[in-house]
Length: 160
Image: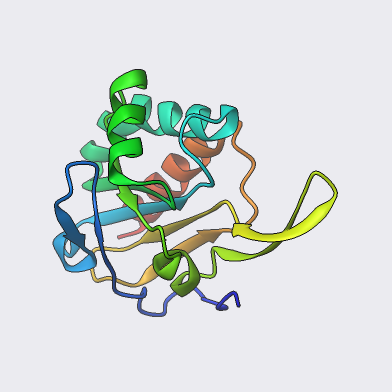
């Protein structure tokens, strides 16, 4: 069941393996902004576009003290191939049991080809350097999304 997260509340803590099999924890990102985005599957059209868009904008995110991390149910091996195939620079975490997605409300019922099933609800969370949720994008549309996240981060950074 999807959890209803809200801005200004502490982001759920997590630990999950990256493409190299190294466990990455939410504590690793304290002191910097974290863009945590959930996507359904490596090497599918929308997910590839989203990962490439975030990778292309990564230097701009880095300039704003932000890290971009994608999460899907795919294996570490799948993530490694996805990164290599598309020269991705964002970090990808493996969430095969959907625990991380469920904690963020990014796992739940959705329609796919006319049938209802459980799956990843494409969504993005902007987490501030203190570990609190600064902004949530539910039901993400891929086109222009990385740009919207960057604009929101720029806006929040200039407000500090």
